[in-house]
Image (cartoon, rainbow, N blue to C red; front, side, top):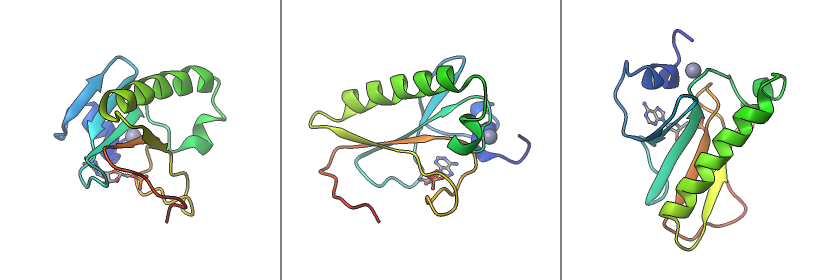
Length: 114
Ligand code: AMP
Ligand code: ZN
């Protein structure tokens, strides 16, 4: 997708701190971290959000790949646990229109979220 910041990161067109990369998945450090560890795990291929992914035939594969990487990174960085977040759509708090999972770790998380 032409004007998508995360597509540009996945294509190495703009810089990011990449912590994991495979053919299908990339994980980067969030630019504005909300916890000592704050990573973003995303498919290399562009999906606007979880809304779009669940309508796609490849949803099972993509979801499996994303959660495998996100949970591995969570376990690596969060000795006492971690939180995965998928903000979806405007009311869900999504600000970047390329599906991603936030991996938050390194501090105690509170509930409810804002
Ligand atoms: P969301 O609001 O759930 O869509 O999350 C978007 C996240 O992307 C926010 O936490 C931003 O800080 C982060 N972000 C935006 N641009 C970049 C970038 N160029 N590199 C790394 N993280 C970014
Ligand atoms: Zn994109």
